[in-house]
Length: 398
Ligand code: FAD
Ligand code: DHB
Image 1 (cartoon, protein in one colour):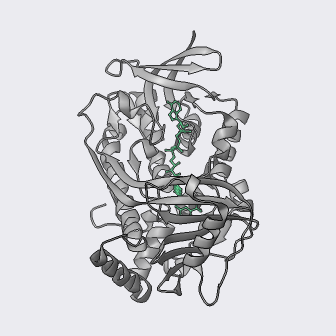
Image 2: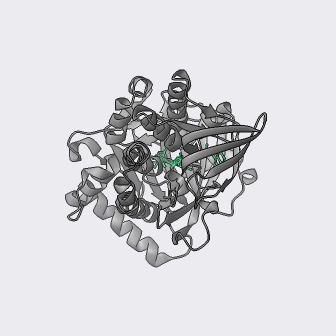
Image 3: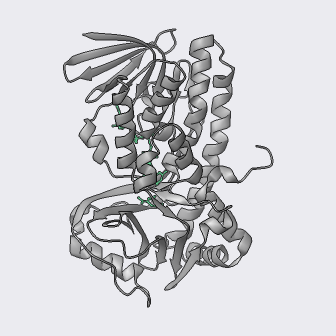
């Protein structure tokens, strides 16, 4: 059995675990990152696409800005499409000139992996964490299995950055975290297609047949989503059916058809919201999708997590290097305020853009909200500023 002794063990090499590992490294705190999948798998797992203005700057500051600046697509607006008409939301104009960047999570994970491996810092792929033992004691033990057999990590602190289906949150005794959650009667069928994007900016579309989102990854790759029933299965969706449904929902007089091409990836993601009411339990800290899930409309999940992981690194460093736990004590409350803001915005976007299958009252309210969002300047501005950078709006009490 391989035994590793290290101040911090990070479970999960998603964007959150990798960014935290990098920040700890810069603060002089050693960490090991354990990831159950292979490097190739995590670098191809298609997910987020939109990076907030402040987060793009933060990523550049920590040394992963080069490809993001060279290959990321800078967008100054999005389109809201409903009742057959297009309405542009001029994001930059309404948010101090700031744009968003469209850059795939796959690319960001590649950049972060490279940064860690080139610095010769431990990143163990194909190493599945099965349990975290002795959480109440001074040195919890992470029990895992790697390609060469059992691995045991004795750490002062364990960070669960292991996503929505991870093991870390499950190691906390029942009843410690209260969990607030909501499920929505929608899911997203997402595809990646070898087709040049038909538009320059993202289109969020509400159509009577359902939601659609037109996004992209590069000048030759489109990323498209269809709102579907959560019980839908991919087998029911041939390429022809996907394209014809996308066309039926997205078509307008100015854009009668969309560019089609081979579908190279497809998946269905159910929509839900989850918030665990505490981020720290003894010597375990949770971060990212392990703590909160936001519905994807509004593109906040990864942005939210990266925004507060910046606070976690100095808090852990103060604790590990100086035995000062004050920052860590304040960490949960500060993060939770931001998490709820992201939930509010994501819920607002989700409920405004997905026609309800049977509730006409809900549908009437949705259209009223959409009309307001595109015609009342203060409403458009709030949407734009929240979309570009959630932290650009200061709330009265912090
Ligand atoms: P993950 O990325 O899930 O990483 C967790 C890692 O832990 C994984 O690599 C997993 O393999 C590993 N792991 C799990 N269990 C174990 C174990 N037992 N042992 C070891 N390793 C383990 N967010 C945005 O900000 N902008 C967007 O545009 C956006 N679009 C999205 C679109 C879709 C369709 C979806 C589904 C999500 C989107 N998100 C978006 C959300 C974003 O993808 C997530 O918030 C983000 O991936 C969370 O990062 P994470 O590091 O917390 O978790
Ligand atoms: C993408 C994902 C989102 O959740 C969103 O709101 C916008 C774009 C994307 O994958 O490109």
